[in-house]
Image (cartoon, rainbow, N blue to C red):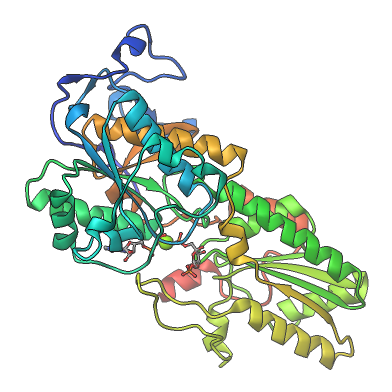
Amino acid sequence: MTLHLDDLRVRRLGECRYDSPFSEMLSTKQTSPHYVAEGDRVLLEDTVSMLAEHSLPPGRVPSFEAAGPRRKIYFDPARVTAGIITCGGLCPGLNNVIRGLVQELTVHYKVKRILGFRNGLQGLTAEHRNDAIELTPDRVRDIHNAGGTILGSSRGGQDADEMVDSLVLRGINILFVIGGDGGMRAATFLSKAIRARGLDIAVIGVPKTIDNDLPFTDQSFGFQSAFARATDFISSVSIEAAASPNGVGIVKLMGRHSGFIASYAALAANAADIVLIPEIPFALGGADGLLAHVEQHVRSKGFVVIVVAEGAGQDLFEEHGLPQHNGRGTDASGNVKLGNIGELLKESITAHLTAVGLAPAMRYIDPSYAVRSIAANAYDSVYCLRLAHAAVHAAMAGRTEAAVARWRRRFVHVPLSLMTSRGNQVDPDGDLWMSVLETTCQPARFGSAPDRGELNRAS
Ligand SMILES: Nc1ncnc2c1ncn2[C@@H]1O[C@H](COP(=O)(O)OP(=O)(O)O)[C@@H](O)[C@H]1O
Ligand SMILES: O=P(O)(O)OC[C@H]1O[C@](O)(COP(=O)(O)O)[C@@H](O)[C@@H]1O
Ligand SMILES: [Mg+2]
């Protein structure tokens, strides 16, 4: 997809006429590698060859608006009521973002009223709009020490007009939506309804997901904490598998469409023989299939350790007429329910090894919720705080229908239309997957699984 400068423009509610409380602090700042003045931009691409391909003057090269405080702001802070919602699956750092938003809004911008809507979009329905809680620095002081979200979260759609009514009735001028791909779509959907009514309400997304499946962000917050936790489970399973005759260790990790957690955790633990991710199809049977490789590991090394992302091998259920293992259908948010690949591997590996006289000691764990419900680690805590700062600056400067993200290590504003334009997946031809292959020594393909080109042509 070729992006042009116009695709990267962020919508503004209007001219910034108020002095920012940061204007004094900013008056001495020059544009520098660490501070970008209004008007300067962060490049979309960062290699000379990619830039050269455009053959465009510097002012037309695709670039993002840099995040950060402006000297002039759009909203009069004294009249602002801000709202915050968290939606979708849990992710380490949700409370850190809430805390960062509340602190930045109150301490620096002196915003007096912040409402936390309960349980995701549900909190914006007529039934629940009055359940919102007042968020103050006192209320959020210690919340970053705990996982989860003090506001609660949910899946499932709500009526856009009813949600906009709630924003109007509760006097909201700025809404922060902390959510994943679904949450960013919901923010877009809400923004459109707000725009259709000509309302002066800014909507800013803070992208969250342990799957790291959102585009235009180097890594989503919480991802580091989540894969670090997942690493512990891989280490435990590998110790168990190694200590048992014909040991088979399987760890199933989250990752609906993207195998980032599986790949990073496997690299960090450096104990997996096989990593299976949604981006790379694989075959179970046949001379080069997964089962033959598992058998080979057990025969030569005595045990095998497999890390599998939940979205891997979904084509196997139908292809082999295998039971769906709770798959099929969609959840309340419209996400496809997946077949349980962990159970499928456990059953087929047990059957295969037993049939060849290597009855296995199976050590299978699915630590999914244990991985995503923890508090943010130190790295993510910093990241969440800085994203929260960027989100507040963006909203106060009248940006809307945008998300804040870190892109090529700089904080930027990304139009929601781009955030929801595609997913982010492990590139089978990229350096991350190459590192996985180098570490595990697994083959590039298990069996005669169709290559990606064939799959794309078929769909
Ligand atoms: N296309 C959409 N339009 C409006 N709301 C959506 C859309 N997609 C998802 N949502 C809502 O956004 C919320 C979060 O989505 P979900 O997929 O559950 O989690 P996540 O934000 O983590 O991806 C849910 O309440 C869901 O109903
Ligand atoms: O059981 P739940 O709550 O529906 O969540 C399961 C999903 O949540 C995730 O952890 C994260 O998904 P979202 O970021 O889209 O919420 C997925 O990896 C997983 O498929
Ligand atoms: Mg999602």
